[in-house]
Length: 256
Image (tube, rainbow, N blue to C red; front, side, top):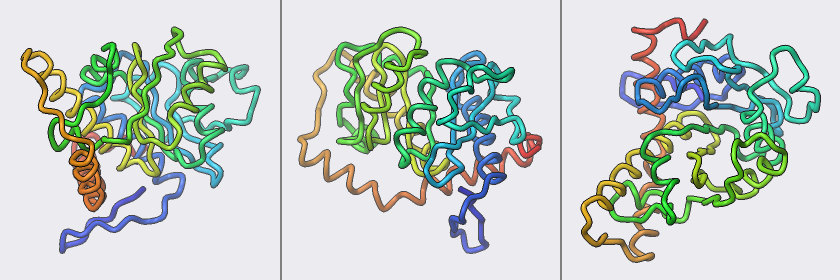
């Protein structure tokens, strides 16, 4: 979603069109590199362009996040059973996850799947739950689904269906022994969810590493804290707008 910056500091969301979505998705890939969330030439981000969510943009197979431009993104149809037969077919695991989610969950307009270090380390624990021990960890209380049915590389129909069903209406899916997927209604919110989840995972892992007992909030306090984050939705848009302005100065080719 495009954010226009005004002199008084307000950020007003505008209705997205495909070009804006392409540019913002390209920004998300470039930011992921700056944050160290990328992994070789794998992992995928996608954004729906149709009302029912089934037509979506996604990065092409094996393209490094740092080089992705708006025009590089593939426009795919989740209902097209011939997608994997084409010359420019997407990565099989990407199609399995993103194609299934966009086909079955129209509310997940944006889906980021990656293996950032801290979230992935959390996903390898026998108990990968995000314990509410501070503001950032409590932000996700009641909003994280956990998939413990890891079956190897996600490239089979059943794997994609299970992942999509487990995600449901949650913004975060911790994929046991795998990584994390983030769902949102627009790109800035998906970026902010991923940003804070990775930070929260780092905090929780450091607390575990201390060997001291965790000061886990009560469910009531954690729920209250999570609810107190809701009025800060605009914070994610402002944060994303900052990165988009920064990229426009140093890597303007993302718009190409």
